[in-house]
Structures are given as structure tokens and as C-alpha cells.
Length: 163
Image (cartoon, rainbow, N blue to C red; front, top):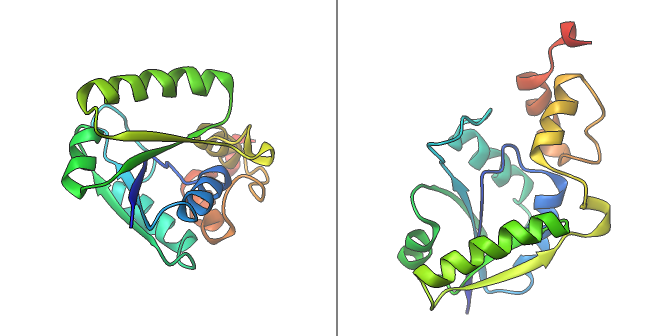
């Protein structure tokens, strides 16, 4: 059985991320959602909170595990003995960036494959950045965030005096 890793910051997880997770989980034996603890970013949610939110959203998917990692992705993939890295692509600009990252990873670890999953058209505009901005103004998150975590997002980000 193949083991794939879907890495990301997921600050927070979006409906687009969840779509990629569901679709990727059908293509491999097991899927690890790797939550990056990126020391060069200051996420809104801690690594533990992001892991917990993703766990809530993926509870019904049997072949998924969620865990944090830091450092080089290829080192993490090798440590887990995974077969492939999953990357979601929403747009041409995403593809350009993801192509560069896949090429770099290929140089560092020629034995590790990268599999691209195109975003479903319903999610091609969804990003954690836009989700956070809309939440900070109390906007409707029903098409951007999984329902299991919408209240957590509002509790952290919505400031009534911002409107």
C-alpha cells in the first residue's frame, strides 16, 4: 500500500484543502496530512490547534492521519517512508510555484514523486489568507471553511469593532 503526504501550513484548513484530502485519500493506501511548523511564519493558529482542526474535519476518512513536522519536507517524507508528496493546485500561478518546489524536491530527493491534484472549480479561489480576512470582518465562511471549525475561526479572528 502506498503512503502519500499532503504537507501544508493549513492556517486554517479550508474547504479546498479538505477537497484535496478527500480526493487524494482515494488514490493511495494511507495519507498523512503534515502540518508544517514553519519558523519563518507566524500562524494565527498553533500547530496543535491546526492538527486538531484538521482531525475534526477528516474524522470520517479512514486512511488519514494528521501530524506536525518541521524542517525539510523531503527529510520528513523519507523519515515516514512515504511514496509521494501531494500538492493542490488552484491556478496557473500556484502551478508555477508548485512546479519550482517539485523540481527542487526532485533535485534533493530524486526518489520522491510529487502528485498534483487540481482544485475543483468550486474551490479554485479559496485560500487560508482570504478565509482569515473574511472571518476578521465576520463574513460568511460557509463556502470557505469546513463547518466543524467555523466557530473556532470566528472566535479567534472576528473583531466586532472591525466593521
